[in-house]
Amino acid sequence: MSLVDLTIENTKLIFPSTIVEAGLAIENGKIVKIAKDVNLPKADLKLNCRGLLTFPGVIDSHVHFRDPGLTYKEDFSTGSMAAAAGGVTMVVDMPNTMPPLVDPESFKTKVEAVKGKSYVDYGFLALLSSENVNKVSKLAGILGFKLFMADFSRKPVTDDFLFNAFNVIKNLGLPVAIHAENPEDVLVLTKKVKHEGKKDIYAYTSARPGYVEAKAIIRVASISEKVGIKIHICHVSSKEGIKVLSEIKGKGFKNITCETCPHYLLLSIEELNPALTAFKVTPPLKFRHDAEALWKGVNDGVIDTIASDHAPHTHNEKFKNDVWEASSGFIGVETLVPLMLTQVVDGRLNLNQFTKLLCENPAKVYGLYPLKGCIKVNSDADLTIVKLGVEEKIKANKLHSKTGFTPFDGWTVKAKPVYTIVRGIVIMENGEIVGKPKGKLVNPLNKNLHSSNH
Image (tube, rainbow, N blue to C red; front, side):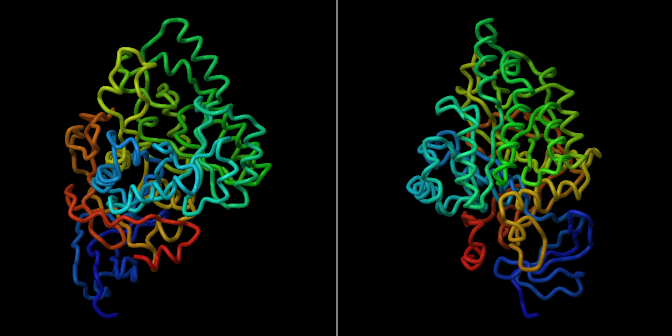
């Protein structure tokens, strides 16, 4: 083999089931050789990664980068910079922007708004609702759909709607990501808690308890299994939710996957100041027993992916005296990798599980494997290279997002992303963005086109 663009040497490659001391050769954005260092070709650029671990590029499969229309909170430039700084090589962006991504016209608007801004690769989900279900078959270039079951700005999500919508989407071969909270229960409980005059962070958790999540999961799982489409349950937050998912998967349901987030694994309502409305997120933070059940779900293989649900808002939108007035969600794309690798250092996860949960499985959920999510010859050369055992404090004012509130401000992490490499291009080195915004839109239905456009 003649001269290549880049070699990665003196490293350990982390696969889903093994760890190998070997290096990589990269040419034209692809991995072209995996071999011992002595057998690698000469390269224009050689990275000596002694003491570092090399993962497939981490995919954060749940972000809200707010572009277009809500860019005072975040945009694709700042959001993708935060992703790259945190070791993330690709994001899946949600459709609740202004305008929302609902049809070919709004898809075109979104593509144009984001073009030339992103430091990492990206894909889009389109919104699924009663207003656009007849238009979705015309959408091309998306990774799947997002259904918000408890979105009260739209018509109620009935079983008839789910059945009809899933049948329309079945022909497209794309998954539906679902925010699973049963709307009828949320309405009744919210009215009750508000009537009681409760306004703190506990009130929000009381209005959306775990059984609301579990009931929604049972509904969509039953209908999706009958229709035969793939669904992905977003941000599982509760003991009840993980229990029904374990039972559903145990019955042999093949078309359902699920995700959780660092905040559900690492935070619990008992430890929060009730007045801190900034901790509001949907689904709400639950209790210690919920976090423990989610950890069991991770280690039993019930949970397939871990994502950030990065959802920025301004300080004024987050900090209110009344939880019902506070915006829901907070940033997370930059802290995802350090927080979860800290769990590896602490023994709650192993390196192979990390690779499955944050690299391989997100790629598989959205039809991107083996283009993304793995270290294989001919795969995209997306790599997250890290150092374990380095202690640093998360500092909100040092993060790259436009809006700085993170519930993990001041937390000590024990791992650091050292290089973020996107299709063979070094985008981040030692916490500094060094590359240019060359991120590409990834289209799962035309992988060959995506590959040849690099």
